[in-house]
Length: 299
Ligand code: HXC
Image 1 (tube, rainbow, N blue to C red):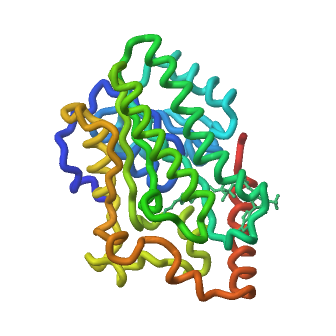
Image 2 (cartoon, protein in one colour):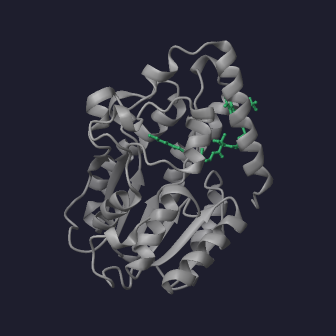
Image 3 (cartoon, rainbow, N blue to C red):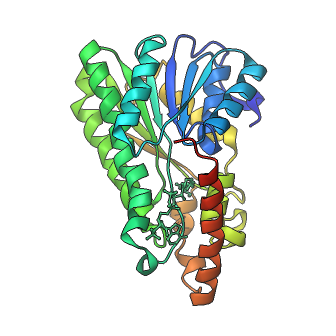
């Protein structure tokens, strides 16, 4: 990310303590970088300790400050509880949570197994709720304020053909955002979400566009003729997490160059023409990526 394009003064997030799930890679890493640069202490979790340590080390070398990595699979509520205990023991309550961790792959829905559905929904739907519940209870008990931000997609408004478990799960988190914004607003807990369009990352491209397939929100099709740039996402995330706009609550904000209004922002147009052979090929590529990631996992 080009941090010179962050809109905020240094020190804006001094004293903030933010957990970013999936913060070791992809969009989570970009937001972590922005929060750290602006003064926050950032806790990141993911399934690969080596990846978390590398990210924490690289970012601290660049900006100073503190990033702490916890290996934690958010599908496991007990592991979340242990991680949150450790964060609390390291300086008390968090002031912010970014529900960013996700899993996804493109597939015809008729090709999915129950395990395939669960692999995604257990992360996105259940895992996000487990993190929110564990931390929310503690904050309510301690009468501490915080901002929760969930990273969704524009599919929460118009559906996600060929990524149905992800679209269903993210829609549920959209509903969680709206519901808890109201229910827990009285505790000073606020809930917002960002629905990004295409911000290319390695994890996403490997599973949503294996071999270059499925790239529906390509630069060409976007009204603004390009994909998103990381500082644009980071600027919106800081706005929603930082001090000064606390009355923003219960909102899901798209950042996609108006892509979804223009062309649905989903995979219908590019993936619907594909046949068995192409799907088989893409499945093999995605499973290769999954196996490689799995071999590096520490939890
Ligand atoms: C059909 C598949 C499959 C595929 C896996 N499965 N890949 N089925 N087509 N391409 C099935 C497997 O066969 C198995 O079912 C089940 O899913 C679990 O597979 P595992 O490999 O054991 O899963 P696991 O190791 O738990 O990995 C979870 C994962 C993986 C979700 C499958 O992709 C992952 O860890 N992803 C994290 C990173 C990521 O996805 N990033 C992209 C996020 S992008 P069976 O029945 O065989 O046992 C995003 C939104 C982007 O979220 C929005 C853009 C606009």
